[in-house]
Image (cartoon, rainbow, N blue to C red; front, top):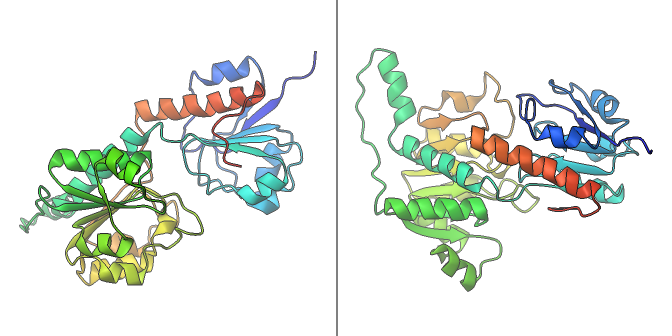
Length: 320
């Protein structure tokens, strides 16, 4: 009988797959090794995964540059625990014949609900007013009424589509932009596609739902923030690298933007001295939009299912 393949989960911290019953189905067909701490260097990543044929990268903060992948000749497959694959050098993965799979769209309702909550919390100044009251101050300021306002959706995949639906339910007018708009997609979503500058100039809330690619990196820069509607709000549950953080902070500090609701950052975890923490009208979450019991279970089932499909010779959700 041939030896079982080795599957490594190299940095499951905070806990994602630890304790998941979905791992039982893997343990019956493979040798599963889970590390409950993050590797602190590229050398440690290589040491942990050196004997693995398959890997589940449960935390996007654990990065896999090409220089590391090239030193893992046994590795044949990687599944991420989500939709984003920007933690992995996909070009080198292809060169090394490493199949990479993701989990597209399965937690879209969970993430969209979080984005919607960030929008409401930012518009109603909840973080600011809570901090003021805890400091003993009764600071009253105008909130933002959203019904009848315009919600601009940037990126119309499953999460953007779910956010558009929530916005319409609230009574907002929804417009959208994507790299590849079609009349059919507009009809499916019940939105109007407009060019990006028009969306930014006319939207009271701009919500980002794009993958991080070379095209989308720093899509929101000084120029784009300058043309956003004065008094508008930015919501980002996609990837921190889509936003030029310095430009965002400048727009917040100047009062051009009324606020921002953020779940993702260009540096994670966010350092204690990060200037975003000094901005008053922001609502900040630690990249946990899909971190509910239901969301975690969906992601764990999806990652394990990707591994099993690969072992059965029928890989699914392949991005390489």
